[in-house]
Amino acid sequence: MRVCVKLFAAVRDIAGDEKVELEVSESADIAEVRAAMIAKWPKLEPYSRFLNFAVNQNYATAATRVAAEDEIACIPPVSGG
Image 1 (cartoon, rainbow, N blue to C red):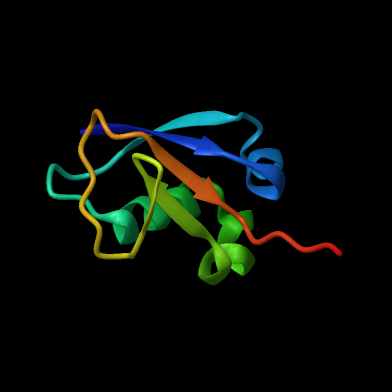
Image 2: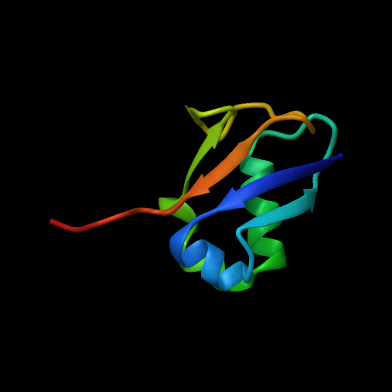
């Protein structure tokens, strides 16, 4: 299935777009979405363990299942004062 992922900050810069489509299995979870992103953009690898995801505006774990119609957001770490 195809899922759409919204991207922010450095992740958006690496991917070159604010929204991307990825091909994942019908039983995909966030771990598979993360793996698909790293496979497509290897420069994300150093950030991979720090990336947070939200599904339908709720923070998600690696085991959270996703569906084609879900709103998925990849949220990189932020810092500042």
